[in-house]
Image (cartoon, rainbow, N blue to C red; front, top):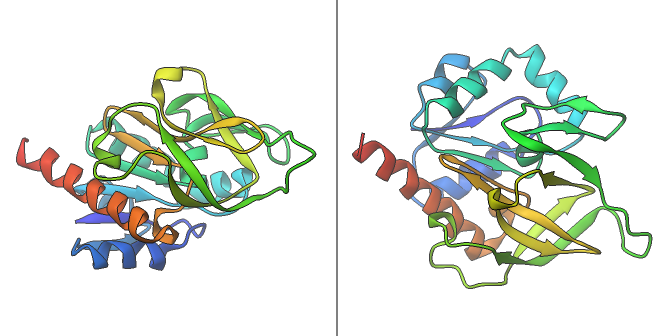
Length: 208
């Protein structure tokens, strides 16, 4: 069972629907035990970095999330769920994140482009990944964000997107995957990513 983390900051039903379309069983939960014992976790998010970290703290979910990630089981962050994996965000002042990845989350600097970055944009894969299997290079995905992650280590950047600058639109290290765009809003390409993540989960457990 894949658990979609409920901390009051995500398009939970949309994510669950994308799993259902792919025939993948899931549940929405804010239970620390359900999260830790899940076969895979999807960590979505919409809104402000500081508010989200406070919500995680209030619900007692910071340590369960870290423990799940450390277990080696597959994890997928979406949008704000990617940003929160970093050391800190700069929205409304510096706020500590989960610090799973080294680096920071900063605002787009361009004065010529509309902020937030909203709509369809190309995603360029920097390396091969099971998560993007069967998806053409430079395919379009749907974005809604004003901030982006700047990883310390470039080898953890799985994909990049151009919007006034080249920013990291997907990251990966071992069992941890995260995307800045919304797969659940990205039509067939997004559904394929959700399907691929489901296969990553199945492969992990069939080998363990």
